[in-house]
Length: 248
Image (tube, rainbow, N blue to C red; front, side):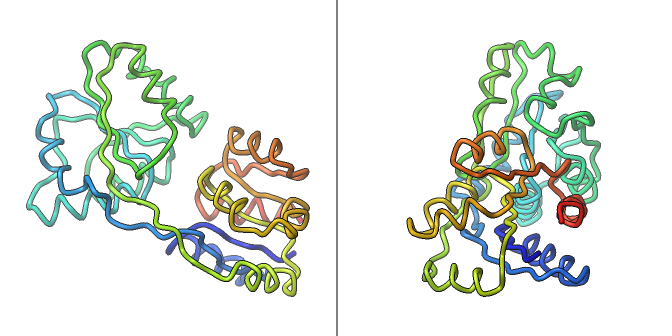
């Protein structure tokens, strides 16, 4: 097995190192980098405008990193009278360590659907929910929360900036290494991958086993032409590594 890891930045590099230590050939090819969001500077004000008991939803560890950085830079803290939520356990643990605040997250299903099943999400009339995220993302949670009466808004804490490569050169390297498995942890990554790989290499791309992290992404990839799609139970690197080692 040889694995192409598309996860951006440090988490992608860490997964490649973990695979290498397990004796697996791995190549890191992030398709975009993460930069400070255009609305990040407004975050301290937006947090201070919330009422006691309102909700803050952090979509990823990257949202935590960028948000925590701007709060510290402006001598602000994570308010004790707000309720904080994440989708995944690892993001919750990470945020809790950074903020020293309690965090709620869905245990059964690490997804927007799972988040909406939490008891705190059942009666949202008049509740403000501030979502800290990238410059794009899924709107399912927002729409469902608004149907339940919540007032939902976003802060773009970070944005994805495409990285430019010679696509043919990179794909040739992958083929020479014998890459037959690809890790893609978000729909944005999958869509970027489909755009990045030249038309004459699409057959190779879709013959690779695709490791992803949700049924929603898996459904999309199967419709796009992948025959072999495996879902990791969680999105953290340890879970991804275990899934990869079990796959081959």
